[in-house]
Image (cartoon, rainbow, N blue to C red; front, side, top):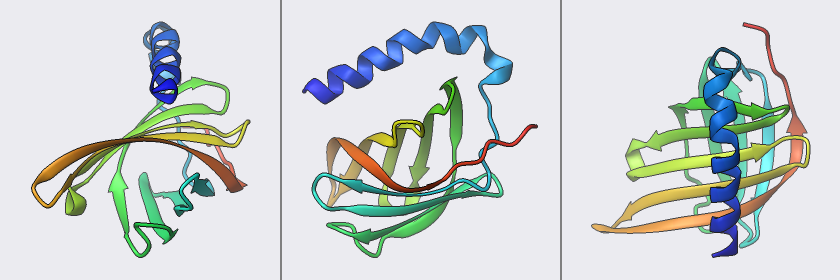
Length: 136
């Protein structure tokens, strides 16, 4: 519950800033790669390429799940982003708050599994990073 409150507070505190700087909030982070690990042991390799997010779960409960998805991104501060995408094959709506400077990621997902839905909110540590922000 505390993580949910943290994410909510971060979101609310940055919404005003996001709308006032809309032209600066659609960054191009193509070329950025990262590896992040959740507290339950799940590990993901992610890459931003050609305006798609490529991901692969290499460890944990979703090991072997991979894909590439289109995404929406908002820059909320220097090296801090909100990212949202849908994984249609797994009926998942995912939102990530990524702080590349502190190497932290907070992920929220609404997932359909066997005709039931569940919601997830987890913290991950970025353990490998090659960050790039390109000028549009």
